[in-house]
Amino acid sequence: REKANQNQNQNQNQNNMLQTLGDQTWKALQQLHNNSTSIEDRNTADKFLSKYLPNQACCWQIFTRFLTTDKLPHEAHFFAANMLRSKIERNLHQVPISAQTDLHNLLIEILQRFNSKDQQYENVITQLSIGLSLLIIQR
Image (tube, rainbow, N blue to C red; front, side, top):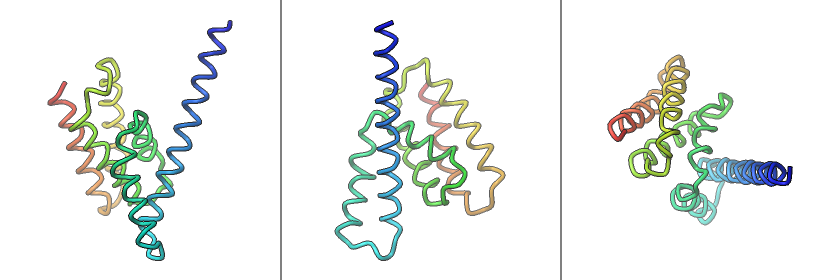
């Protein structure tokens, strides 16, 4: 019973961290794409998105969460697709072999969803297709 409570607390802490990091990522993306953002804030947002976020263990979940959230703008989907492709290319070893099939299936599911969107999403589809290819090659 105590172990179950520990696991529940650990899962809750992971979910809270994931939610916080997702919120920070969304805020940084908004700052980066807002014309009224100061250069200093834009640089801070860029460092967060390009240096800090990719080094977080849960960034895989952030990117897939963004890609499976329909209400986000194109820029957020492209960012997530590009970063996920980059993570697969450079850091696939971080994903346990047992979870790589799930990642493969998720990429196919996401690709199918984006395939029904307009031409604006071709760059998202391209990044996801490259990521899927890299995943298959590396397995």
